[in-house]
Image 1 (cartoon, rainbow, N blue to C red):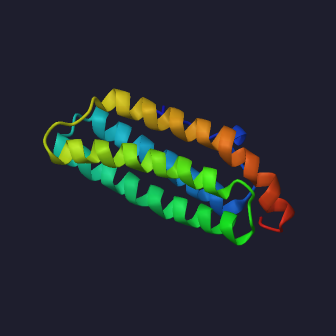
Image 2 (image 1 turned 45 degrees about the vertical axis):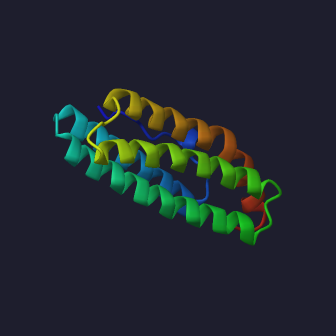
Length: 135
């Protein structure tokens, strides 16, 4: 069984964003697989980098849609993205410096953050974007 399960509660009914969220879940599960296989810190750092790179891609796409359509709380949403990015970059730096954070704690943090962000923040903008014709 995967560490993090995608389910219909996480769907926003905006195809590209749902696809990207599913990819983030896959990358978190890929990181968990590497942890379970007891890959070294260097390999874990590489998986974390892939997750971070894709997270930036997703944030850029999502923020672009929100800005394009004039989402009223765009600035706050972007700030939340920035906060997560800072934390993950800090953790990535720890891997690079040879002081990796506890992998189980990092996995749980990522899983909880993604679920809460989708269910709390993203679910707020979904009706707005759908009303603007984004599907």
